[in-house]
Image 1 (cartoon, rainbow, N blue to C red):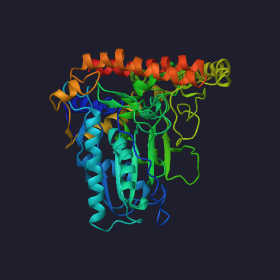
Image 2 (cartoon, rainbow, N blue to C red; image 1 turned 120 degrees about the vertical axis):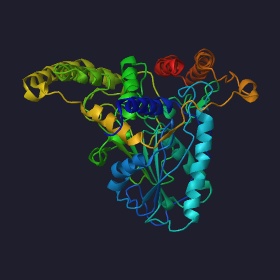
Image 3 (cartoon, rainbow, N blue to C red; image 1 turned 135 degrees about the vertical axis):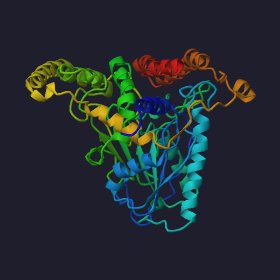
Image 4 (spheres, rainbow, N blue to C red; image 1 turned 30 degrees about the horizontal axis):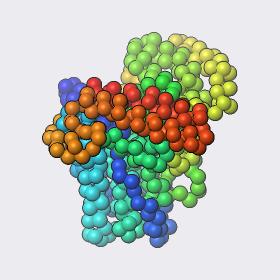
Length: 474
């Protein structure tokens, strides 16, 4: 480790910004483009070949360094038989208000990033040597994963064959089942926007246009958001998951990525594969593991029962490797709901009883294990340190890149975008959110769903409030 502690702390803030930044993106509705088809049998399982990989950073990371590009190659591309060269691609990666007052909004940043990526892909194809065996590979993390999702319909409308481009995405907020951009697409398919913040819940990515691999860290609060956010415990766990899981993608090992669990999809011949990378401890309990000698026993004592309660927010009570995953197909758009099915709720008492026994057993094992008394960082902390080491060198940040508020910002939308975070967050909470709640209420009521008409707006408000408060504070 060659960076000073001060550098690491600064890097941590930058990477955390990249996480908290990508929070609730926005995007314009995409055309329904289905014309592009495979010309030579390329699928999401096809080798990545010997071409060029375009590497983008997440929010706040405008231009990743070569160290980051090398880490992406080693962890996510090489295991899929990529033998080509990496090329760093600069994109704005801004997100007001998380990167400071009077900074560029996510809407503006995404629109620019989408055009930059589209141009870069077309240039690679025009230069030649691109085919099904050696496609243009695109790697996106967080905000740039959303950019990658948005550019796919654009490429399809431009006639780019589906076997000319292959996407590898991590921490994707537009994932159909779990991505926060789809969870809050309410009423379903309306893609509500928050004008004062420049954010739009743009809905799910397409899964049938280009070969794509999507990797999600379990409990990543941006890419694996609870389906039932009325469960505040699950929301808090997801918020901590942004810090401990969403930020750590560059710090995972190739083995963790290779061993990721393939999630079910609605069709066997899908062009998009979805993978879940499991965690062993809830993000809610991970800070306990930093306490010498008693931290691990305490975490293991509480983890089974807390997992039952947290996983209720995902519609199940399992504490296995897929506990933090909403049951259902990964490629099926799944917005948030009010309460899990009653059959799931009925399992809670027995699951808690089993969890108590398991927790006691695990804690005792820790206490009698001599290794417990030799202090070492927990695995999640090692992942974060490695992520910082891979992200920091040579990276150009977009933090505090001031963009003055314009006349159009103030008068072309309501509520206006002022560039002053406390005011813009307040108008989002007290003007825009009630409007969205009303639209959900009337839509569900018209469909005869009285419980959801009342419950879904409540769940949405509970789920979005912690993120909004973080944005106002930053």
